[in-house]
Length: 118
Image (cartoon, rainbow, N blue to C red; front, side, top):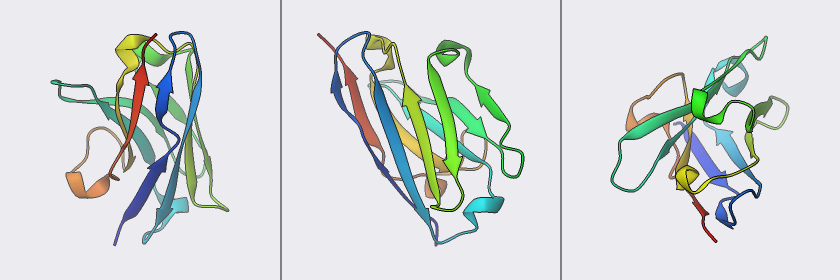
């Protein structure tokens, strides 16, 4: 059973930084492409970033390029999202997801809230 547990969210001022982590279990993490997606209040789920397995190829949505960095530690079954220069528009629940794009609900964790506000 896929289990993904996100942590690291919180309240941060505009321009600040946060690092999100995701602990994965119940599936072959090191052979899985992994992603972060987010959902802002009243909006649809939105893809943020993906990292492939083996070569670790990274892709980012245009609105986070240069500000967010995705990484993975296959030895610890952990996915990370470093977020810098945060903007109020980044306020959302962030989900760790197995697979690329927007997956099925069962492929995501419960999410962690990120609030960017002064």
